[in-house]
Image (tube, rainbow, N blue to C red; front, side, top):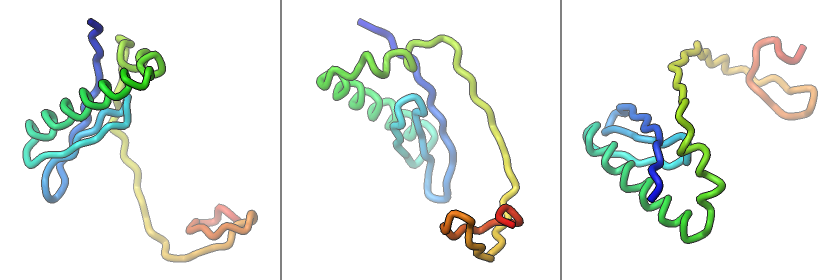
Length: 100
């Protein structure tokens, strides 16, 4: 039996809680923090069962067994400019003096 450790990131939204395991890209939700974590645990277990059946465990094993994991909370200021500038590559983008 192998023990896998994974991260549960949980945040509150207007109608409940969202939970996500960044190592696997698995997400779930619930009406409470505890329910969101419980539902994520179940979703991860199902994901791992499926990965085992498909022989994919070796591909994800390192991310679930590494002992050093880091998280950071970052913030950014977002301002919607509402102006569309054509980019030099021909793709339209909303930007502020990026393409001059």
